[in-house]
Image (cartoon, rainbow, N blue to C red):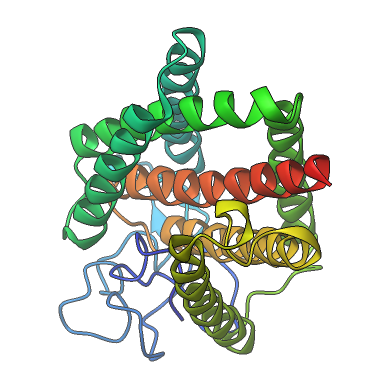
Length: 286
């Protein structure tokens, strides 16, 4: 099972129908490059995360005890996510306070998209590339948020609050197993994502023609439905990302993967924020 987030599609830590555990042995599910393969460094007999450990003094250590360094942990994911998101916020603040022109902000947005795609297709995480993405994405968000906030006062703050609420809600439901990331759930989200992208392309074509006040189909009642669907889809992406992080930790993935986890979560949160921003702008414009 793979995440719809492009960061994780080349990593595939997940196990179908399973939950993370440090005593995971070799897995046979497809889509997991670390499971059931002779080259799997995390599923070999010598994997300290796959079998009980005994300390030098003869004491028993529970399976999965953190006896080696250099692996992905929840602390490393949280710290790098905080750094990446903090950079996005800082850059957005600079763009907002300097009243950066929207055209320049869109230019930074295009650069951010290129950097994001570049990192997504790299085999390893590049902290410098991820931070460059965070800076350029932040500059884009700051300029576009400032512009929208000028015509729809309070839109940016409402979008921030909405994004935080979705993140907290999905995290709570995931931890309580209210949301269960199964193979069927993943297939549904991927199908919905494909449909949403296709609709977005149609919307772009309509917008270029000049219909819908420059918003294409994303105007009025249809735009509201479009925005709600985008937020819900973003919430589903978050659940998939949480699953990838959980299983990455369970498999004892290299610590550098924490940067990819941070990058993936940042992409999803930016998606949700932009959907909320559009939605609030439409609602206030009616």
